[in-house]
Image 1 (tube, one colour):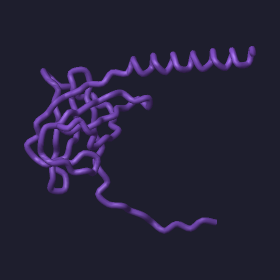
Image 2 (cartoon, rainbow, N blue to C red):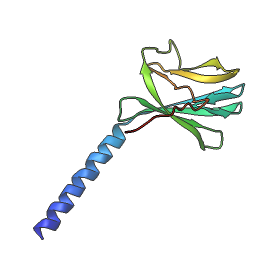
Image 3 (cartoon, rainbow, N blue to C red):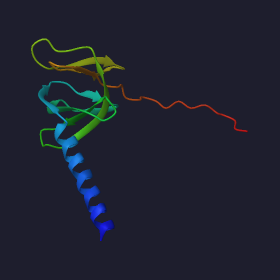
Image 4 (cartoon, one colour):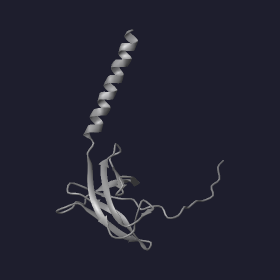
Length: 130
């Protein structure tokens, strides 16, 4: 009986800690009407209305979710924080990469993140093992 009580107590503490960690996570949501096709993390998305969600992850970086106008997550990537911040309102920064527009940064009022470039090719080398 004591063993079951201890196990139940530990489980309750773990659930409480998980609930606190989940509620402490903040997600910044931004809506954007993007007038051109663009790439995020190697995936090309059509022009249109999107919601960009940015949340801190446990590794110290950020998770970025691109949500279409139907509420479906169409792409997600991990990003790193930069020193860039927006001056008056959040902004999406696009760069031209290999002939197409790609989301490069998301600058918010309190922080900015760099979105990784998608892998366009795969490189490999022959190796010998001994």
